[in-house]
Length: 491
Image (cartoon, rainbow, N blue to C red; front, top):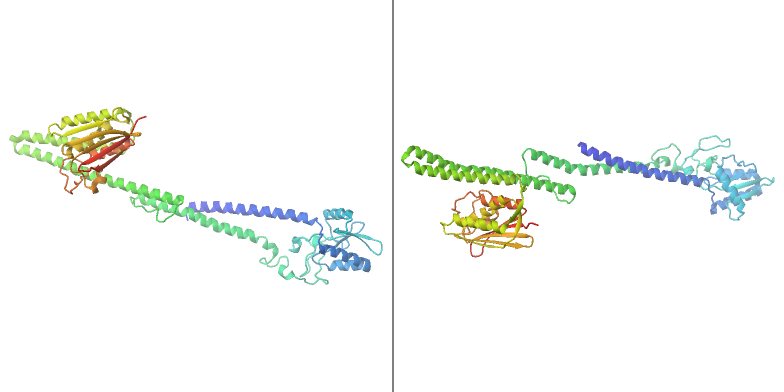
């Protein structure tokens, strides 16, 4: 078990034990207060009335000796008798609260009162009353006081006497009903009442221990699994491994987020590796042609001019490729636009179309622009120019001489649609058009023979994403491709 498990375990256990002790202490204090109140109360039930009547008849017909013998024979309920001097007949101690309560009851002079004034044959009056039965004495708690007021041992099997009086089992001091079940004080702890009082506390503590173990295990298990996943990721293994089972709690959400993160990292690393491979391949071809042109110039000095033209074309080609790679790398490294300014998107598209017409004047390409004036976006003018220009140039290369550019506004966004009438793209390749160095197939499955590096649409995608926009591509009905750039309107 890790340190986190023990932190969870100890924290939960201490909280449970504190709650158990607090609740148990509150109940104990309540019981103590209740017992103190009951200790000063008189029994007013039918049995107490019967005992008082019996004591009065015994005193009347048998005198004090008969009454003493009767009271000594009583077990669970007993009658207390106080003479005029306040001395108890059997020498038992009587709490002052009980004395005051009995005196107050006597003044009420009710025939159903819990206190009686009994007259002995010798003229001596006794105050007789029955105290309420106290469960503590039944359980064997509290001292047993003899006539001399000294603590003594309870007779074997004899039940306790309320308020510490001398104990007599039955009429002759033998065991009474229920004594065997209670057991003597200090007997087997499993059955004793005193030990039984701590059973709820022990049970609550054990339940708290089990609950703390289960809860600590529940919290620490997914954290250990996440730690293992991080350890594997640090060693280069980015395969999703945390969210192995279903669930909907926060740990499962954390696991799914971790798996998505590792999957995205793996895709980025694979993309970087693929990009490095494609860059190496794209640079190898012009470098090979450069070396061939240089070798031809050495071998055939009379063809030096044509060799220099080839070297110049390949150098320009490599410079353009490196420039596009730098732009793509900068966009991937920092997707935030640091420099923003208002741009009239219709005016910018018109200028791009004019430049494209001039460059393609020899090929006879037709470029038609339909733009709504006055639509302004906020962004980097150089990057947006590069994005739109790449899409337009790509349409001119593949568009069979016809390119249509439309600028429209829809709610808070402006849409720039660049459409051509070329062969279109195979449906399986539409989702991959924005990947660097991707070479697509035509609709009929034929290979694309148009020269290019496959970076124009990739750069356009990243520029639009950096401006909180979107770019979509689809085949047109009747042939051709439509690329739509959507950007938020400024203000």
